[in-house]
Image 1 (cartoon, each protein chain N blue to C red):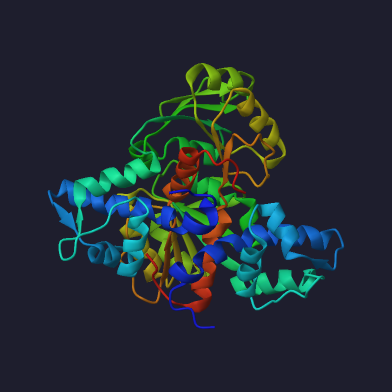
Image 2: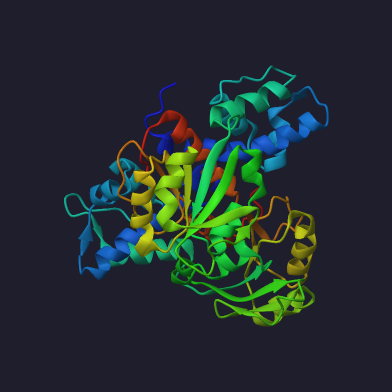
Length: 216
Length: 216
């Protein structure tokens, strides 16, 4: 499968995969062999046809009446997302959001291993938060290169975001998950995904306006 | 327009509206009268047809060659999202994520006004963080009711999420933005949107696997 435009074509399906994974892993723990798309759909308040379409992007097709083989489905989703491998990560910006993300337990389940946090604030340096040290920004490039860090979670203030990105690029970072409001200028080989917390609020806002109740 | 399934049908378009709004507000500040869908598309690395479709849900159609009237477009998006009115909010859970969201500057631009944070931790009570007081969880229901709070941002640990939601419902909350991993049981009149930070990581992961570079 060639994906030229993840964002437009498959993005909504990909976004839903983690919530499917939680339910299917639970079924696996309960010792179930098969899970039906209808059960998953009910759990998440989605249409069954939507669930089947979403899961099809991982290459797995359910069997009529039986549903999906649970263990194979977990493996297929994890493999599709690359979550069956460990990706080393750093958090750049040791503020509230940075610490929250460094300590986000679910990421570990997904193979995302945060091994350091970076900041310019001398008062924070040397601290250990969520088992992870706070290191000086000057060391960022060398640290990324020396430790084979693939993913950077960027939570610095907007005005210094580009400087931090430049340091990451210098260290040969593979991907930047950009939580700032700054549009980064990076070489084309670097994957950049901007996370906009306002996106979720936009969805909630429309739901409030439409008073349509629960969504998922 | 009747929206029966925000999530499946319009959700991706709604998610993109905040990023459009930033660009269009900038054009307004620069004194521009019209902005073309192509310019917006270039800025966000989207297809122009996608931008036109997304903006059409707000009821505004661009003019050939001229594009969209900037001031009217800002007003239309803000009205569509209900961001032209102030919504009072509380953050429940005074941890790193709670403080990060309480201090998120962009929310203020969108009419979301966080007026208090709640926690059970006696050591945190009485503190003022980002100009907002940390109050005891016991007071949550009464506070929500007495102050006409519409939105609750829920960042407590999963095991206590339902208890917090019950208190919010008791206070007649309108909407819960659920950042926990717990599926809430609430009356049908309460809008619930679960925010899953793993969704963004899923997108980033697929981009890494496909090495397709920048997205937005």
